[in-house]
Length: 278
Image 1 (spheres, rainbow, N blue to C red):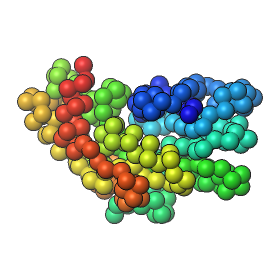
Image 2: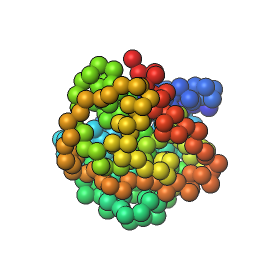
Image 3: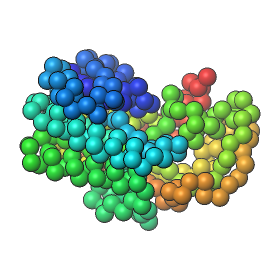
Image 4: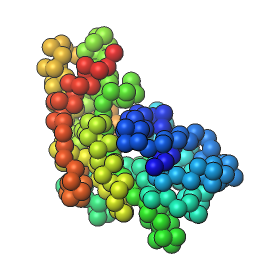
């Protein structure tokens, strides 16, 4: 099997590439700048002819990525370029990485059938991506699956993300701002990749990959303090990010129906992450 990954140098992409190699896939990486060049992109896929394509490249999912034009071009135009360039490739599945942000604020676990009510530019572009992939798959009879990750964490995550910042504070005494109340459905990277592997083998439209459990920021900090035996240094703030929510949890019934099982509790995943973070 041959798999192509764009965004392979990111946190999720690196772990995905390693797992695919373990499964004896030939893994090819696609530099994100080629996504903006339709001619080179078509030539690339005509040469590689992959069995699986993983579309991870995105912009706007980090707090410092705020350029609206970049969000649009990276998340919509580049996806459209990818779809067109691979239209005549006989791949088994193209796995488009969406976002749980597509759902917007909800008061119950987020199900794949729920109305997408995002109120952010990033979430809107990812929701548009999902619909674009769905329409393209229907018109051209392609297998395209959109994965909606919830809050993926683990070793190798960017230093400015929440859990790495807490760990950095515990190890080095570096202070960080903490809004204690927002909740997230935290899923350890190894369990997340298990879900991706399950999903890539089925002809699905959209699938959530989360644990179905949610935890507040403060509870995560407390767990890491217990694991490390140290105290973190933080300044309490109110609503650090406007899109944070007090209800952010996956309905993962579809994922479980594929045979997926969570192997790491949040505490176990945090312990591994803490111990493996230098």
